[in-house]
Image (cartoon, rainbow, N blue to C red; front, top):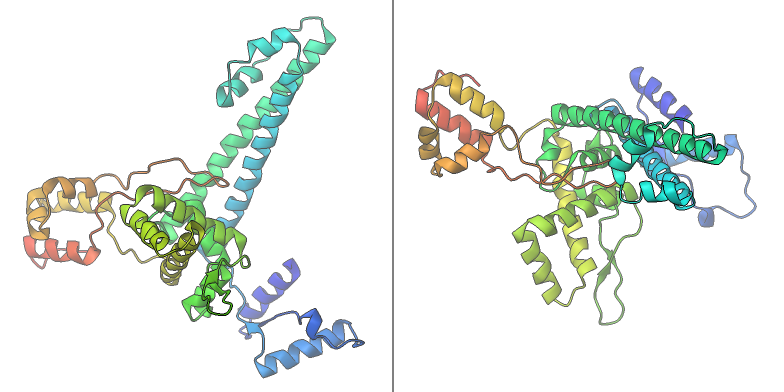
Length: 364
């Protein structure tokens, strides 16, 4: 795969038109036919000439490719943390009673910090070896956590600078935005209908009708990482968004199961994410901190802007704070998706208000 990626990048840089060809299905291959590199190349050429089963390869030269290594490395570090924690607790469970009683009330980071501190040698080979092993595991756990936090901060910086539109999707955090961006690639426009992106994410409905029963079932194919990101967004909205809760209740009142109702939501969110991926750098909603700084620089009062927008001064004050409020912490493998709670007023409204208040000399 890495050879194909390098070759694709080189050909695209030289100005050649590159197409991906799907591997022929085994059941469609004629029994007894030859199988070698030359035959495969001829089949691929014929498929390209006929336009059958071809697609545009991912460009891998944008923000998604820049954030992908940090996401994958962060996942590995978080898994290493979990394995290290399990190993340390297993050693403590079989440790002598004085050591087990000493650390029985501790857990998580406090346990690891306490284990990392080396004790002086006791003269007992068993105890000294056990404490040295636990100290090494604790140091590994703490180091992996700090490195994972650094990668997460770098990934968040890339997404906020290059793809702020993804973070404006309610319930979508940085890991989910990167997963969806990696699934679509840095050239999502190659998937013309947004239904293609939904199929890629495994969020498209599959008909499972029989006789007079007309129904659709879950799609268990597609990119499962992207499907997990959509699922997490759905879970976040169900917990925090009243409108989503009403939608789930209405769907379930229509004799649909909860999984079917969540499948419908995944399809809607996939459509929203596809539109954001087409223009990731375009903000639909203004940055509260940036607008507050501009308002203070221009000498505009909060009540003037709130009066022009027809909202309360408290509402405007919440939108001018330093960015959105986050309800829970995110991690690369267990994302608790960021929930945007600031008033969502479009940039055009802000621009019109500032122009009306101080005239046409306002610079945006």
